[in-house]
Length: 493
Length: 98
Image 1 (cartoon, rainbow over the protein chains, first blue to last red):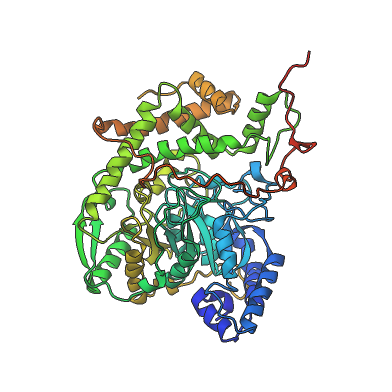
Image 2: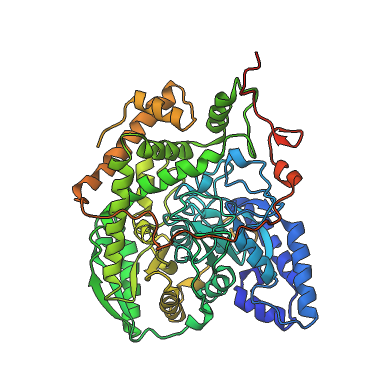
């Protein structure tokens, strides 16, 4: 096995035992990038110079015999929606093509305290709006399992680089499923913590009542390690919640006896690919075999989650994206006639089609005469969706569903019809409305070899239950150990 | 719920400080109409007695001490400005000097 193939916890043991150096590890990952990144195209910016400096610092710590944090020297990739001091942060948008943040997001400060090695910034749908990463203004990212398919989105780059072993782990952001869905489609572990668990300071805002940062990792143990590093209340984000953060590694328990798993019947209806359904049902049966009790539950308002989402998220986005006006940072049009003309031309030239579509949708939903019929209506339905989950979690500990209704689809297959693309998020948006923590773990493959994800949800701040179920599943299955054979790669046909 | 016309799209575009040519206006009218049509399914639900959820946690008035703290240096803030001018953000003329 090459170093780039290992998990963070395996690598930590080797670094600690001084079997390997962090510089050697970083070089191994950059070597892998040279090999496969031309095919995958997961990165927008590589930060090798910084990475080698950080790796050198981690090595110095290990050499001095210091007690080093679990992520010290670990190569990590960061979604290009998270502000990184002095490193270009584009949100995959033309409007931020030259934006270099003068500060670090809180998650970056926390990761630097651990001594991570930042490999680069990953591709995404522009401003995190999309489900396939095809809305990037810069490039298409390819799914390592089949380069003709999309990696999911919006954090498609962050999922693809972990899947392709061009990063050991990564950070993404999830508003309506943007961590969980690409994790499922790329066959890696991806977790959205409870809304408010992780500070959003320095996360470029899309829909502020839904956005949350979370990790992509190769296994559940690494997921717990990254959560330990990034969670916690932050005075720079007044919506981060002041609750104690447990040591999530304590939840890595290979035992689900006594836990109740609810399976919502509304998630297993028309539109769900039959092979995906089979993989997920088999996974749930496995958990039952391992001692969990499984019962069918109902979340009656599931079918309204997408309609609700495509009012609330665009409405919040239309307000958040008002800041891109060509005045303080980012792109400005050439030779505007006057101030209003400058705003209009800057924004029309700087934003891509999907971003404009959502700004239009959101502005409409908030405009005079329509606000009650659309925005307020959606907020009320959000209450009903949340109440469904509140009732369910009185009966069960964890809810298990498919993460995505289909495996990865072909590039360009759904770009012509925005509504079809929106329906990709049908399994992930309900939990987003309720602010729940959710994970996607690999649970099998369809016949053509594409991975399938199992989504596990819990009540707010009950990440530990999710991790325990996910860990038990992982310890008793081998789906997460499968690696994609990226074609055209050196040594392969 | 209403559908949206090309005039409606032009009105909303102005509110959002965007501008579209005729073809784009037509495309957005069709796409937004289809999306709003789908969203119309929310009307199947009676929500008269349901309170709205704007935020999932019961947070109220998070305050901080009113203390002076160091902020970013002016140069760092202006480094990203498209047209900085004498320590300020430059914009096209907004006041008529005639």
